[in-house]
Length: 448
Image (cartoon, rainbow, N blue to C red; front, side):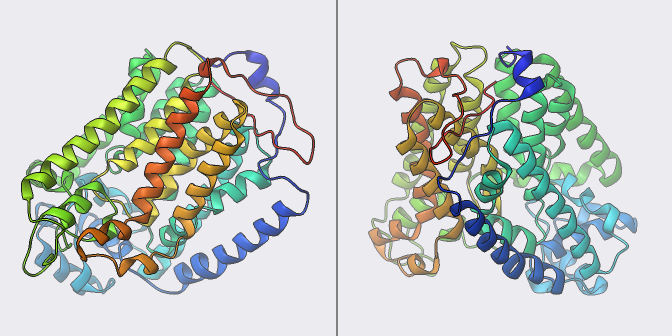
């Protein structure tokens, strides 16, 4: 039920190379860091953008003892943004954030908006560095290779910093949770997985998975952390706000968000894709592929059921091994969670660091280098793809499918990960490989 040996954790597996060649990694790392500084750090330190003002306004309302039950009242919320002089009021809203989100920036509530964003940026950069260090340990990659892998997520980091989103911090918590699991520290692992779960749900399927594996201390740690945050939220914000959230949560699950176009390809989800293809709307979608609303509903349900079924069957296959099956299982669950999400944005894909890293590491260990680099390429394309090139296809009947490159790349990642598990005669018995020659490819990892 735990990773295979104490020696593995005391000494760690040998460091492998993700990228061949001595000059490739340093040059690529320098280029990516320059892009990070110019397009992520400088904008975040210079001006407010969208999203962050929503978090900060909610925190100020709570800190000032305001009527928190009105947080989902968008006109009133925008008026508070005007009063606090935070961001652009016409773009402000708190819906459909879960109520505990209002507590996220309480420590920064008294700072000036730009100063608060700068502090948030520094915290995100610290978690970015921590994620790189922990991934290098988990995957047994050189630190520079782990840094390149993380920085290749591109927009996930740049927009996460510019918009003041907490997903870099949330991803760090997930990586820390998995690292703590490898180190046989279940309480720390559970707390790390549970810390952001009431706000961003990505870690919830992982807790369900570890419950199925009877990692009870880890799961109890996660559940207690979640309950503590939720109870604190109810105590500070009141039950009426939470009751209202439960009433609007259904719309969130089908990508019908306040002040958002329900047909937009910006969400890059199966929900909006099938809606765009099969639901007619005179204003927002006058040119569907076919005007058949029933097909849209059934298409979304059928697609997600198929994806979940494939994942479950594969997880059952991986469950034969109490140790080596965990890494690819976490990879599959992490990728699937984003794939079936009703709405995603570029900054959400910081959450791919752990699952894709585990998937690539597993593929390299199982001798499927081509599959590993295919997944690495799809992951990098998600981070750097010029989405403006495909935006023109949106709303043009069947051509709308071309406006969803991020969704198709994520689907390709999922399929490749599943294929890599099933292609090997006995995939769950794959163990860390010996270090490769300097010019070769190793990329072994600590497989739990």
